[in-house]
Structure formats: C-alpha cells, structure tokens
Length: 249
Image 1: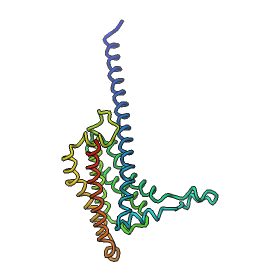
Image 2 (image 1 turned 30 degrees about the vertical axis):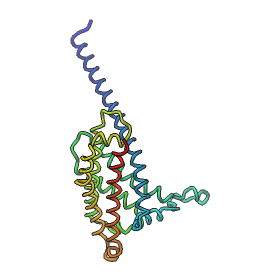
Image 3 (image 1 turned 135 degrees about the vertical axis):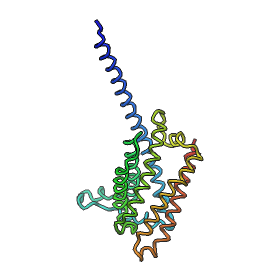
Image 4 (image 1 turned 120 degrees about the horizontal axis):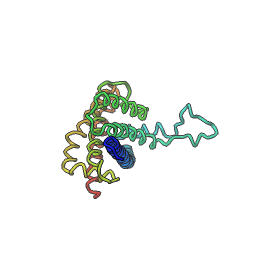
C-alpha cells in the first residue's frame, strides 16, 4: 500500500537523484570546457613564445629560454642519467605561461555563477607573479619585489578570470569541445574586439608599465624601450589571435 509518506519520500528521492545527475553532467561539461581551453592555450602560448623570442627586442624571452635550456635541478641530479634530466628551455617557458593561464581558468571554473571574490583574486595575483618570477629566473623584470607589479598582475589575472567565466557560462549547456567555437558563441566579433581594447589591452599596458617602472636606473636606461616594444608586440599578437578565432569558422 502506497501511503502519503512513502509517496513523498519517493518523490524527494527522485528529485535528489535528478539534482545529482545534473551536478554530474555539469561537472563533466566543465571538464570538457577545461580540456578544450587548455588544449587551445597550449597551442597559442607555444606560438606566442616563439614569436616573442624571435623579435629583435625579444631579449627577455630569449634569456628565459637560454637559462633553462639544458638546466638540471640540483635536487634531481643523477650522473648516470644526466642527458635525460636536461630541461628544454622553450618547454619550460611555455609551461610557465600555461601555468599562469591555467591558474586563472581554475578560479573561473570554481566560481561559475558566483560573484568575484577579491581576496581570491589577490591570492591569484600573488600566485601568477610567483610562477612568472620562477620561470623568468634570468629576467631583469623581476629584479626586486614590487607591490605595484603584484597589484597590476592581480588586475591582469582578474580580467582573465572574468573572460573565462563568460565563456564557461555561455557554453555550459552547449556541447562544443572547441575553444574557438565557444569563444565565438560567447562574443560577437565586434564585442570581442571592444573587450580587447577596453579591458584586456588596458590591464596588460598597466602591467608592462609597472615592469618598466620597477627597473633599476641602469636596467631602465637599456631596457625601458624594450619593455615598451615587447608590450606593443604582445598587443599585436593577442589582437591577431582574436581575428584568427573569427576567421577559423
């Protein structure tokens, strides 16, 4: 005999079961979005590092690659397998940039549908500075700790988190596993270009300005102009990437 109590218990069980299925499906979809985003980022960042290192003023990128090329960690030295332990400089630098972007993606995926947590963004800023400082061991851009650089990097990271969140929210119920397609489904071309000039480029300009301002007098004399040129090239590459996304339909 089905009593009212049994009926209500069964109904609650069905609803809870449906919610669990939705949660699993959402988690699976988030994983798909993560994999699509990470796959795109690896390709873009490898191209970015190549292009920046090949510039006549790309000394910093070249120095980072040269520093790590053939490097062996002291804690991991093994005379018998020395060649296998040698690092590939370009791979280390690309991985460093990837870790920075991935950290922003992690925060975006974790906070879908929630307001930005400024303390979390502050911690993210400190994290990406540490990743960049570790990767850029031989760079004069990180000669000394600078709170303005940390603050500008936090703004840069926040901009990345907000953009990732928009892409995730716009695609959480779609089935696309291609980042460029998801990007186009989130932004019309004119919206993407406006977002670039209003947000992405502005926070990057501010970040590079703090890099330049943090240089010692000697480094500024020789490197200040190169920082400007590097930022200009980065702007060109980033904007070209947006155009490429809309031309790859």
